[in-house]
Image (cartoon, rainbow, N blue to C red; front, side, top):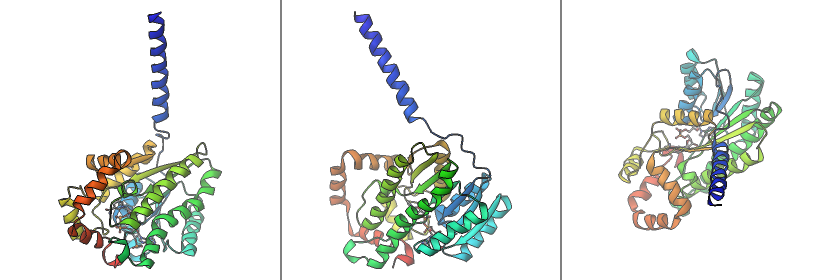
Length: 304
Ligand SMILES: NC(=O)c1ccc[n+]([C@@H]2O[C@H](COP(=O)([O-])OP(=O)(O)OC[C@H]3O[C@@H](n4cnc5c(N)ncnc54)[C@H](OP(=O)(O)O)[C@@H]3O)[C@@H](O)[C@H]2O)c1
């Protein structure tokens, strides 16, 4: 009798373990990037530029989108020698007509989009009551609305071929609510939620979504004085090349979500999810004037 129950229990555990392993396994670990057409937004600097290099090195054909035609052209020239094909598409993605034109131009040139990388982003920090409403709108339009519209416009070509990949670059602040960057946090929580919901909507369609949550990264987004304070608070600041490599590894492995920035970033996300009161307490103690000044300086000249 006892032996029978033991066998049933072992069988149930084995079946549960098998189901869990299948459920958690990467879905598309066979993605080969050579010759894939990749549209990367925000490709003129920072993480987007690093992503453009990393995709090109893997043999992908890349369309680079950002506002500055000069900087895009410089990146295009740097990548060209070892890329299958590079196209620079200057566009302001907060403008509907320019956003649509960027997708149309890419489709006309390459005939399809295999991988859409929603990376372009901007930040605006400081206390909400001090923020410029026009700049709030710009940040939300770029970080969230543009990513949604680009996805909407790229999907038909992917769905028709039952194949496509969307890599959304959010932020650790898309899962952890840090004060004094509330509108940026709103845009990144929005992008994370959009990714989660659309992934479910697209289940079985052949279109896969990966959400990358980078931690603080050495780019133009962080003013030098902000970096000092972030490091004094104990946070790690990554380099764009590392972020790009890890983002592509996650995409190729079929990961749904990857949190970058090391153990402290992972801990932050876990504490926010399961023990949010601890973060409320933390920010009661540590929201100093120094932190406020550092957040107000985010985004560099453009944010002012
Ligand atoms: N740096 C960090 O600490 C950090 C941390 C976590 C997540 N992230 C996220 O990573 C992504 C890349 O940020 P980054 O740090 O690499 O910033 P970045 O160096 O400032 O790059 C931002 C990119 O977006 C482009 N861009 C800005 N406004 C645009 C617009 N209206 N239309 C089209 N393109 C526009 C910029 O080019 P133009 O100026 O030429 O348009 C640039 O190529 C963002 O989504 C950001 O939120 C950054």
